[in-house]
Length: 445
Image (cartoon, rainbow, N blue to C red; front, side, top):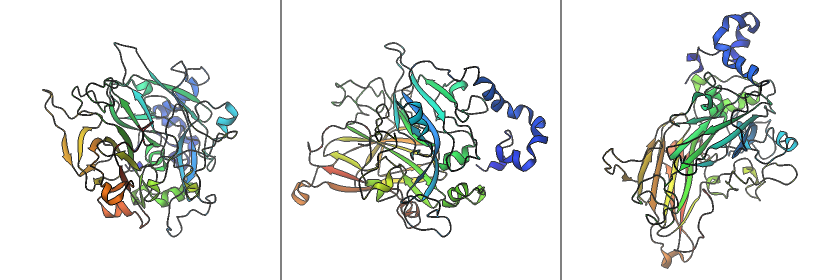
């Protein structure tokens, strides 16, 4: 992943180090994607997919909060009160007017907004998902004029125009806009990220999760809730509640370097924090704000993200909780995805998970044979996703009354569970007596 191996594209840092003006002509074809972007925007071609967007993302930067202390690098002395770590990211600006939208510069969330798509229905009511992208620039680093894209990691049969890989499609410059349109035909769990200066932008926080809901949804004859992870045909992927678990990492030195106008040496990469949905334990079990991207909840007047009540005010720009809450007897779908740079081992203590899907693929053979399997833990490589379903065990009412039974979901690699002795990839599963919790309104709620 070292940028030293990337020779096909002249990036801004190579340009400055090598004497940009003298090399512009020699760069030739390697600069063409950027040239095309600048030519096409005035021509209006960056409005490729007409129609109102289902999601509107804005690329910018932000500060978040992580615990503990690392000499020199963490907490960053430039951070606003209560925050510690500089990030890049996306923000949902759907429904905002132009002034309010531009005021979100410097207010990205981490991880980027969670969203979901209905599988494309070619034979019934054809549906496309439209995602508009704009680039607000960076409040902390106005000298970095990076373009941004959204690359839908693992999506099959996508045309290059909407793929988000900047050498073969379009990237969005500052103040520019582009609308993606997807007809997603394969349900399952995916990731998305910016593909410009991808090592930097992915690690700095321009990452998120997206999942595709199958056409089988709504069929209550196979499973009572009518919710499924895949078009299984037999109810084996039915569930009552779902939770996304995005695994990422933070190397404090790199984040400090970007805030202080330095350039990190990625050959020295060593993660200091291992995160679930942008938080470390015990912040992972703190409440989250709404994950409904179609109706984002923002502060009235400013459009800023809503500040949680104390003692969780420091999680303002980290809105997604990892706490799993369910009733005894319910089936719970855990959607795991890894967009860090190292392999992880997520373990659910005391409850078996059935792995029903991997990399947005149902675990069934060509002849329909069942390839799913039971396990307490799964190894998740970089760029991989898994769909795991567990059935909540009976509640120990005689011991705990109406209080929930608690189980740990954690990274079995001890250093990844604890990070720099400051928490890590761990959360809790809370099982309540049957009928206690109302049906889930949205994922991770």
